[in-house]
Amino acid sequence: MELFQVRYENFKLEAAAKKLKLFHAAGPDGMVVAYAMADPYGLSVRLSPGADLDDFTANWMPRSREVQDEQEAIGLSKSPQLSVQSHGVYTGVRQYIALGNAPDLYTAQPNTVNIWDTVITSGMVGADSKMELFGGEYWTDALVEMGDYVEFAVVDKDDVLGLFAGLGLDVVDNDVLELAKYVQKRGIGKSEYGQIRPGQSAELIAGLYLRTIYVATNAGAARTLRVSYDVAR
Image (cartoon, rainbow, N blue to C red; front, top):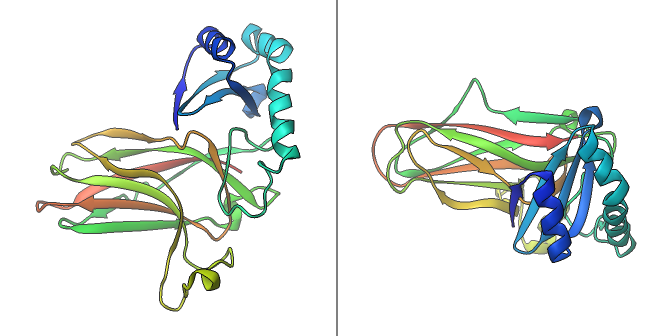
């Protein structure tokens, strides 16, 4: 799902005209992030304290709250069967942080599949032992070759979810269970900036890994990649 950031007036017009489902999330310093969701796209707007936020609180937030309550009532937002849960909301007040790989940038070797895994540690999750991934960014260098592409995923390498046995996987054999892939075979160019936008936030637990994949399909020099994930804990 594509998520587009729009102005508040456009957000209201589109949400009303197409009767989109509304969600909202509490941000830092009194900010609220509002979402209007529909397949295959969604809209978002960041509302700082002021007239727009007052209008949303008075006229739109009740409708947003009804949708969230409906989700919880039918088990969509707190289902224990889902290893990676997708939400249109952030559950509670969280601390927003960026997880990057600077200053040690990823170095992709030519003619190979390069993989880097960042483990989600206990220090990255909140009081509820969860972290929400809601996007990220990446930057390539000037050495990118035609045909190179990147992918971003969430994987379980250590069977922290207890699913390996049922799927015939084994930690000893270095098996990996891919739980979600938010960017698939996205072609990249030289000195390019790109975004990782799941469309909805993904609820993750400690022990899982954020996986970055750079497929260098041609020869040439080693390429570097800078990555930053946007999370709330």
